[in-house]
Image 1 (cartoon, rainbow, N blue to C red):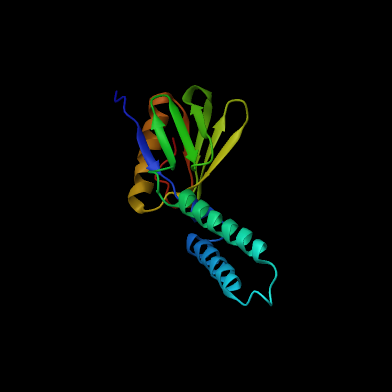
Image 2: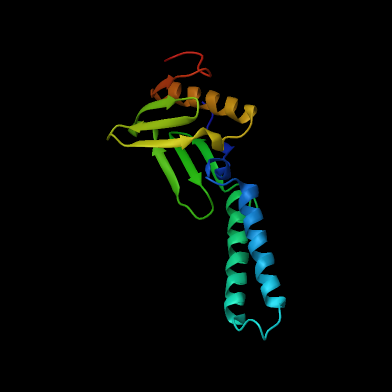
Length: 166
């Protein structure tokens, strides 16, 4: 039995309401606006300190977007298959969610999401739009099947991507 772990990187920007490109564009537009306001005639605008505060806030927002969605400090959003555990990390500023195999009652693989049902009745959902690429999706599917078979967790697959029910 292998003791290693398998990590599948996630893209949280794929499940947000605004795409990564739109978020970056809005932040850059706001920074350009603040710089234009700072460069305008000081006699017309007496709000220089507010423009500096706005510029700082926009730069911080741009930094947050880049750190949260791009692997600046390595892979920060991932789904990890560890021996006896399923670990989900949703980003740099969010804590890990650790699910023990002994507490799972069912894994339900749907076309756009993975539902993890625990024995105490809790349901945790992973948006599969965060798993980008056909190779990663195939790796996720095979790791789920292996994990479910190894630890005796029921795996239910539905939709066009499902090949069998177990």
